Image (cartoon, rainbow, N blue to C red; front, side, top):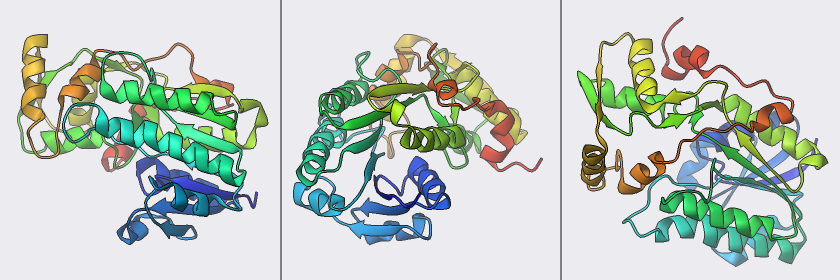
Length: 297
């Protein structure tokens, strides 16, 4: 394609896979990063520009002469629990990015969001929704991609539970009945690439979900089964689930936080799957579990 594309968040889980896909089809890709230490995680062939993506001057300089901006920057937890961390990463960054794009004349934007952004009580979803509102009101040529939880090798879903279960006989689980439609990482990458290639996607948002609804408890059980482990899952009543989140809020890495608990109150499922609209047959994540968890077939 030989387009010039700037990717924010290109060293992350989705970013690395997407950068590889863009490079494979001949695009010129520049990844913005705050640290040179991320260079080893960025696919060979991509350029890297070091700087602070929250600084307007840095973004204006990075965007000059480019054709497309893709924003994948995201966090699942913030320091503290007042929403300010999420607002900085999603809302403030969106505002700075949109202003920089307008300043240098870049019109095309693909923005990663989240399923049900703006719904529910979690700071995460609220900030995602506010960022969407900024994008929708920008008058740029935007497309929003809104996945459920994303599954793939090294993910924060099946692989994260595999780590928790490795040395434990089981897992007490708050929100065990919360429902998700895990979407395969390859389908998410394809959705970005196809949206980028199709001008008809401009001004539209696409929910990205897999073909199967799974509860959180199902996800933990499937993880253990795929690894060949016998593990129990102990669903916790809501009161104890909130206690688990409160404890997790203060543990290193926040294995579960208060805001994660709030997010679990809103099922991450959709009846309006955008993958078929983009010409993509949703991949059966269950069939990908050996690959995700590194289990030999």
